[in-house]
Every structure is written in structure tokens, then in C-alpha cells.
Length: 394
Image (tube, rainbow, N blue to C red; front, top):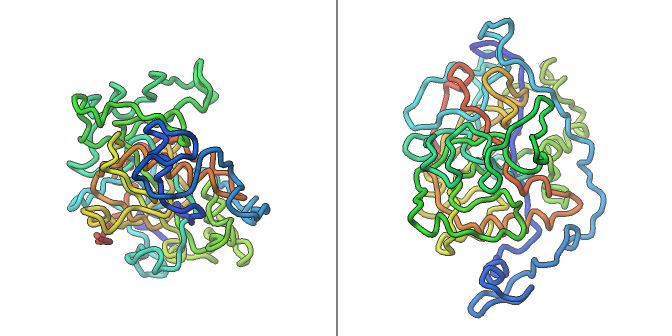
């Protein structure tokens, strides 16, 4: 396998399955001051998520994906400063329609490697996780490209280590925060949408999150990821995993394969990686307004409603995170990305319902994923896929 900027490489991203009914009425009732488990008048009957603990919805206690995370080390994006030794196409990139400054084309056996251009379900993949980043890791002109402090509630711009309740977070050399625990906030703020209006109460009125972490903030922009894979424990209680790598690689070993060894030796082709590991992404600004409530973020990105999923950028990339940049790259590539170019408004209660669904999973413990993660630095053009396509899932 080769890249037109040379590389060895590989895979991964996130998506999952649900065990809780997607009603959400109970959360809205609690937000209005109702007693625990009691629905307010007019709400539909649904599951009482209050006082429920992980493990109450299914009886399986053995996580068949435990120990399946390959925990592959990050690698230098370049070798000795030479660009033709890159690890593979990285994410997230500039997904603006018409923007074409990517320089990497993935070639396998003389044929250009193609991303998945159908739905992931049609391609035989299932979601194995859901998580989100503070701010967008991608950028889309006019949608989520704001870098100034006016576009969010924290009063700080893109790239800062920020948390609205706790102010600027500073890291020591060993990776821990000064004066705060490592659980106190995201590592890096990504791009924001331009929806935020400090004079509009739906962007500023606090929402008391009952299931998501304390870092979640009304008015903030978040990029949500749903990793998908064909080697996951699909249609079983172990389908969703934290970290998501366990879900993506759950059955790889049972298929007689290993990562990254079999990618390097050519036993797993680049096209196999791109066809079996994928990620959906959608960007939201959170508002305290039930007119923007959506009951089931757990299963995947929203499609079929208004402009949700109507303009999707499809490309080959990698796993992300604030520990990677344009010097240190992810070895998990080239995976398929389907990234919604639009920024959408969504209610805070939608996220709280999502977190309730996540905490109801068993035997998996998804507690670590109900808090936002830091955003990766926008990927340089020299590390980006040059073959970006457009897909309409609406």
C-alpha cells in the first residue's frame, strides 16, 4: 500500500447500538422541577432514567471486547522532516465544499482507495461508541469556522485550554493540570459555530445536566463522533465500548488478524481498512430550548430532518484528539469519514438524554465518554486527503 506522499498506516473511528428506549420525556420533566421519576403533565410515558445505574437494562456481565484495544502508539507525521514519509491521511480537515488543498491520495495495488459512500449500515458496519469534542476539529466555512471569543460563552477563542466554570486550564509537563484534576476540562478548544448570541437567553440560560459531566455548557459548540466498524460486537450487549478502539477491534483477533502488524505487512489492505472502519461527525451548538430537542443521539448522526445530514463531506482520514497535531499523527488510517458540513442547534436536554443512554450500557462502562474531549489542531493540507466527495443522507 502506498500514498502519494508515501506512508504505512491504518484505521479507526466511532459508532454504537442502544438499549434504552428513546423517549426523553423524563429528562424534560425533571428539568421542570418534577420529582424523581415523575413525568410532568403532557409528557409521553417513557423510561425512568433517574436512579438507574449502569447494568440495570440487560443481564450480560461479560464484556467480550475487553482487552481488544491495540493501543497503537502515535507516530511522527514526517520522517527527518521529509513530507513523503507521512503516516497516512489525517483528520479533521477543512470540509468546506469546493476546498481542495489536500495532497494525499491513498493508492493500494495501483488503485485509488475509496471511502464508503453509502450509509454505514448498508456497508455492514455498526456504531461502537459515541463521544464529542469541545469545539469542532474540522472547519466548514460559514458553519463552524469561528475562532474569536464572541462565538462562545467562555470569553476565550479557539486553541485555548478553556472551561467555562473553571477558567483557563494550564498543563504541566507531565500532562496534569495545575491546581485542577485531569477531569476538570478539555485540553483544547476547537472551532465554533457562529450561532452564539449573548443577548438571546437560549444561549445563556444555564441547564443543570443530570447525566452529562459538569463541563457541558449551554452556548458551546461540540463536534460529536460516532465510530463504526464491521469487526465490532454488533447486535450484542457489548456493541458499544469505551474507549471506542475496543469496539472497533473487538473481533479482529478472532478473525485471525492483528493491528498494526497486519497493516504493515500487507495482510490487511488500505481499502479493507477504509471499507471496515468509519466515523460519522456532526457539529452542534447547545441551546436551552426544548424546540430543539432530539431524543436519540445515541445511534448516530441526525438525518432526514431539515438540513441534518443533507451535505456530507466524505473522505479518508484518521482518529483524532488533542494529543495529535501536524507533528504527531495517528496510526489509525485511512478510515472513512462522513462529516456533516452544517452546524446545527440542539437542546441541552438532548445531550443529557444521550448521556443517560450511555450510562445505561452494560457490560460496558461509558462514564469516561460523557465528558467533552479536547479538539485536534486543524490538519495541514499536506496531511489531508485530496479526494473529498459529497453525500446527501437526507
